[in-house]
Length: 455
Image (cartoon, rainbow, N blue to C red; front, side):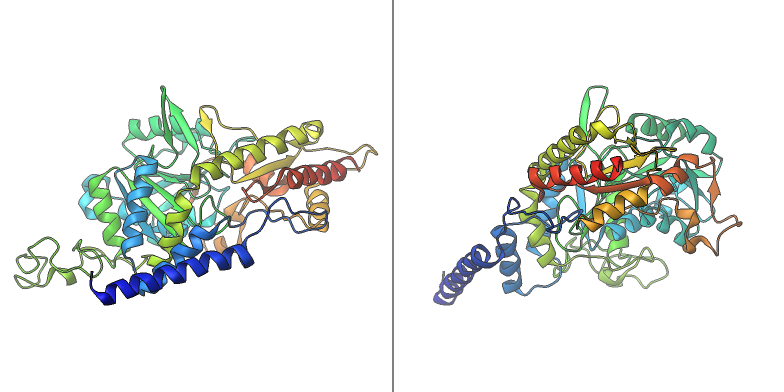
């Protein structure tokens, strides 16, 4: 090692030691430091000095785009979930976009999703599970969900099927896996793609016939989000993962401008045949780095994001355990008001890594004085006590203004009455169970809810 390299290494070490000192003096917090009236968020980032050190270490490289931390994250993420391929992107929404677009590639032959083909999904969820389908020109087919699982009603799957059906694309709701056994059997029976939107459920597990896997790995493609409220974070960020080598190649292409080349960033002639190929109507030997096999995007993440993610990966399963603990404590605390509130329930065969604790006010519920209990009454009480609440995302996506231009057209199809979806839209809400919550905060939230329910 020459003197310049030794000096650089020493300087970097000194900077990172100072970063650790800075974290301990100015950033470190104690989740148990709580007094009534303090803000209780529905979710939030949980980190220590390792994330900050990694972030600064990456910034000192000044590589900016995907680099060494990206490679490390993709490798370790795939190993943690026991999948062959993982590709980092800039958000969970982009992950859903890339997952869907990969299925539109002509390389898939008869299984290629084309404009006008149908994709089965649910109306009760987050819009970016549905948006790529419609933006491409395929047709989402909406099914209802069940309560208290808040996931797709699998009894309606066969009714939704048509000769145009090519895929099922649905999310695991708030960490609770959907009925993967029946959904996967349905997809296998009819030769359909299965995309698992795993953005709210990283670390959840599901067992089929004695085999346990992480959610996101039972289907053809899984997606994750690393936005700060999610199970791990890198600020903005997401991932698309699969065990299928062809799908992996397509995912990379659509993520990276639609390139045919697989050279990593900053590396030329990775395959050793950069100037040998014949592509489309291009001249023989056209530079492979500038050959485009698809109309793609640039949805890569930066190495600084990946650096934060690498530190978060070490905490993933510990975070999942903390979420389960918080959810179970809250569930036990609220059992006494289960006559008024429908409490959530884990899907059969699952071990959720809960994203939130969802409740629904029973129809016709009244308090001890005979007054009606409504969702707004409870959520107002919680917000008045500085406790954040959230609804189950869109409630019913087709009732939002974004559907005004599509309503009463053939841009989508509704295959059930969506009665439960509408019930959720009117009566359901959720609060947080993320690892930054202490037992004291959990107990306080439960007390506020019980007081609001009883009147």
